[in-house]
Image (cartoon, rainbow, N blue to C red; front, side, top):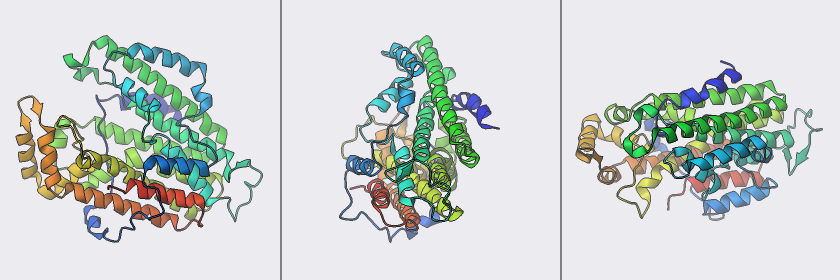
Length: 399
């Protein structure tokens, strides 16, 4: 399937099911016990995530947007925004996505583009191939690499929008009128397709077939991961014996592939050799994993957690808890949390916190953090490399 066909089929794949569920990825379980040498957070690295992002943006020359301003200011997107306003007052998930794009309190939306820019600056120009020396460079980053960072953010944002497509066959009366959901789905498909079309156009302008292949394969991975997620019912997450190997495969596809291959593509644009490209890939993969696991762990370590707060039954702590506990005891705990048509997430959360799942997930997060830091050792010391290290420290910090 070529890139154009992929873009045409993407909304159908992503709309295969209702509310989005998180996907999966990590190393095999027996690696968890080898995390004892975690490097930890240095005393000089910023503790607050927003500060880490702010300092990193200064290093790359200017703040990264979550998508290209040329795309934001276009007439087409302005018209779509006007249509999204009609969803105000409904319960369509596209509204939640739109609010998240505007009010990004944790500065996580621009993370992928920011990492691409930082690793581009950390690697610098190729010392072997000098064919890029005539390219425009600002703050140590080629203009084509900045374009790649924007393309990466466009693809990620488009996927967020498409994941908000509602399965109309699973609607309940509490979800609101059917016509609101139908209209919201149309806008989600239209706006997501528009962002992907801009990303596709930007890739073509880079005039690098290997970069196009890398980003196209990342899109294929995303589609495969989300399709697997959407084709699996909530009940199967509860009753199936989902192991950590399945978790790692799915999470790489849905959360790690885009950043890993974008980092590799940035090295390709600067004509770096295969070894440097692989180290950039490894950093992107393991950093994305740490970021995902950190997000999964939050519902179990927050001091103030509402009893009604839900969490994903296929998140890292739950999958590890299930694997440590065994299938029979896991099904028993699920049964105890199910009261008629009400599922007691608070009760199940306490059971999971009392087991080994949460602490093992934190160890797993730090394992991937160490792997990301190891990949950075092949890059020369610089402000950009330090910023990439600080990002890892921030996503592996739980205190």
